[in-house]
Length: 154
Image 1 (cartoon, one colour):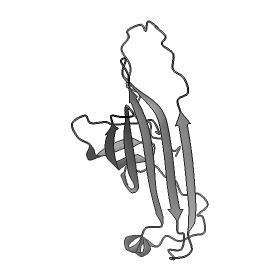
Image 2 (tube, rainbow, N blue to C red):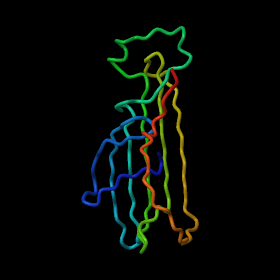
Image 3 (cartoon, rainbow, N blue to C red):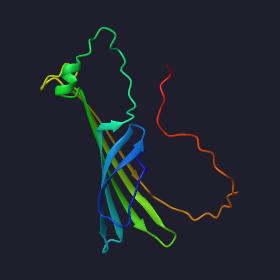
Image 4 (spheres, rainbow, N blue to C red):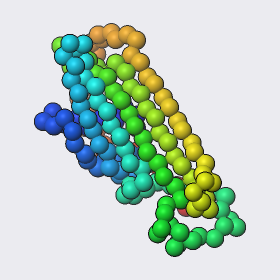
């Protein structure tokens, strides 16, 4: 999901619904062009709190009681993801030369202001070399195999 980009050439700032491994979530894009350095910087942020068709599973909650009123007041889980891409235009197309991601999830099991657990994941990919290889790909009709969303076994 880190290399999933939806770039609009007509707008520099826009938001859209993006289908990913967390579900269908709101994503915001900001595109900045640096003509002197010959690069394009794309920043994407994803709100993981208000996703449609959210993929999640509660594990280890056998003796806990669901507080439906607590969830109305404040959510027990929160999450956000931020991505930064550096693109370089070439004659053959555009290369992603660097991709950086940071995703933060907060869990407040008892809905307390100070009792939260935070998980943070970071990743950075840098393109070191690119080679031109001419490969002939046989033309064939691709089959729709569904989405990239994980389906839990029942």
